[in-house]
Length: 275
Image 1 (cartoon, rainbow, N blue to C red):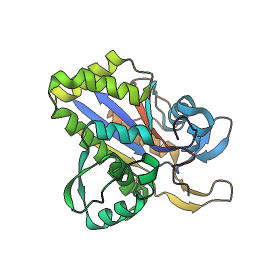
Image 2: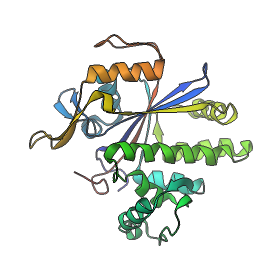
Image 3: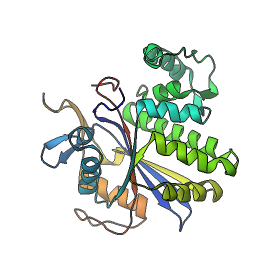
């Protein structure tokens, strides 16, 4: 529901590098076991429930050696509205994904008060908002790794839709997204970023953690934490720092060299799937 408090369904760090003309997207699994200030070791997703954007950003900075100061978040309803406003997004859909998608968003029909037709095709397919939400939350055939990959694919699809619209529509699009998203960035800052991203054709790079090189343990740790990923957070910090800043980070150290933006898709207590 609008305004209800839940856990974060997606945590993604978006790094804007105008010098090297790059946008880097770093996905961190929501079930990563991390220390959360005042709450001990818990899933990363719980930081949002305990302290919203402020604590979620603080948790990322503390555990992964970052200096994030800007954030944006959006809930499920707003995500659907944003996709539909842009006319949907194109994704490459397999048969297994199509079948799962058609089953998993049936419960959303009544919730949104409209009929959403099933997806009939595979390959390059245009998804409506609720369909794109279901696709973004699909963790079959690869768990969280495939799930975060689908999330980045949807964001790239949204970028392509924005890039193909007339530049004259950009101010209106930014204004609409400002209505749907919640951020501490100003409309002029977002317009500046969007104009650069849509006119400079930046290179996109992505990273998903925990990566195989971290050799994460996964499973039910105890009754309190439930199913989690456990991995070396110092080693993960080094990987993120090398990817984002393209330089080494001494293990256990924090950096203040670059500001990045944390993008959080916020689930709700009534709609987010819980393990």
